[in-house]
Length: 105
Image (cartoon, rainbow, N blue to C red; front, side, top):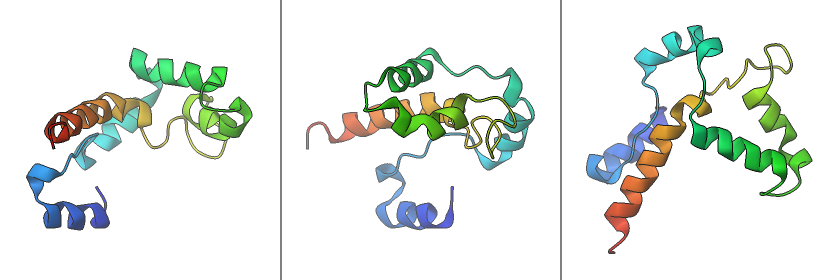
């Protein structure tokens, strides 16, 4: 988590923040094993929807799509450099927790 997010989290309080994804301590190990990792079915389904054009012209998203799915060296960053596929289940869980917390407000 970067400095700005830490400051926001401290201001709003832990109970109002939804932190998700790999910790700093986990990242190196995840990166080392990136080629063995398969994203969850929900993440793969989102990629298929992007590829089909469900969110607009697929060409608009091509660079992002390539960065998430391309082979090493096919673009300037290693495949899924920001670990979006790894963090996706935790992101979905955080969104569901936020929805549940604020649903009645």
